Image (cartoon, rainbow, N blue to C red; front, side):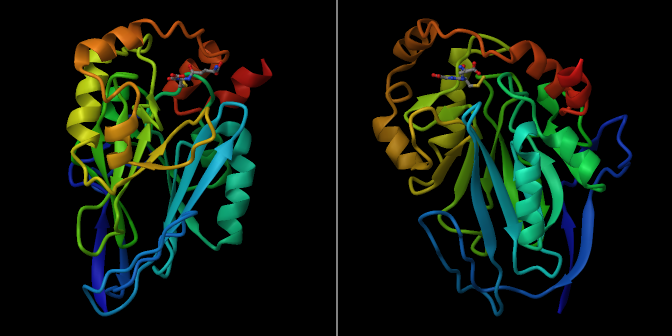
Length: 299
Ligand SMILES: N[C@@H](CCC(=O)N[C@@H](CSS)C(=O)NCC(=O)O)C(=O)O
């Protein structure tokens, strides 16, 4: 048995208000080496034969229908602690998500956001109040408060698995994409949780919260379209009935991002979308990772 230190990030910042004063976060646990990964998505399983015992990614895509938001549950199911994380939880579906986590025998470690959402209140604050010890994570560039801040290149470890952080601003200033690790012992194909930067056959709007069509175009082309073509795309929203795509598919068929930059900017300047109904509630609440959501919703 090897003793591993699961370092979330060597230079990870804890917020001033955090009760988590470490500059690096470690789960020190005895874990075996692994050979096999099983991706429990709707469509894929895979294996790696690089070492001598097994490790499994447990993966669930969850949907919140009022805001058409996807929440993602990932866990290292082969680790004794079954550490898990949620990406982009929604306040309305926190109880559903926590019940599932309990039923699956997982230990929720992180509640993460890809960005400060404008259309719904994050579930992060509620989760923290219901599950002591869970740490909230968001990008430093978001300007939001959280327990832990990530920056481009950081790795978020859960058990033997990890997510890499890529900066994908443009929809908002602080948007990041979380990508499963680039290593032989990590799930293959890789998976990219793109938030609102890249949607399936679409992309996030760029008309508020520091949005910029120029920046979004560069983000997607330099940080997402450079991933292997078989990388799965898992967005934060879908309004058309899609659930998953791939980098190769979006490079070929995305009606906005396949265009040249000038055409893209023109498309984005003429979307004429009305503002999200909840923007005035959601943005202030999400800037504090949803910890005020109950107060705001009840007042
Ligand atoms: N009608 C919805 C908001 C829909 C919307 O604006 N979605 C955003 C992502 S959430 S801020 C977006 O970027 N859409 C891109 C697109 O092309 O639709 C509501 O009122 O909440």
